[in-house]
Amino acid sequence: MNKPAGERCKYLDQQNRCEIFGTDLRPKACANFAPEEEFCGQNREEALQILTLLESSTH
Image (cartoon, rainbow, N blue to C red; front, side, top):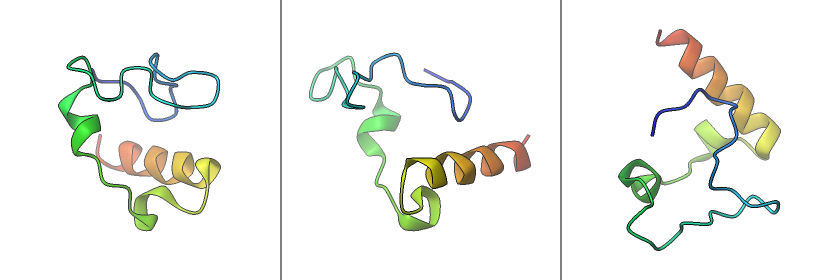
């Protein structure tokens, strides 16, 4: 399941909770993700800015 940074995951509910958490449908990349401040910042807006910058710099 590849998607651009900033694009909302189709499995998030209105409270930004994963609807497939704990199921076999959850992608391995999500299950293995360990948030770090360097990449996630202090809030959602900072995280999106950082991840978008990282994505654009690796193309």
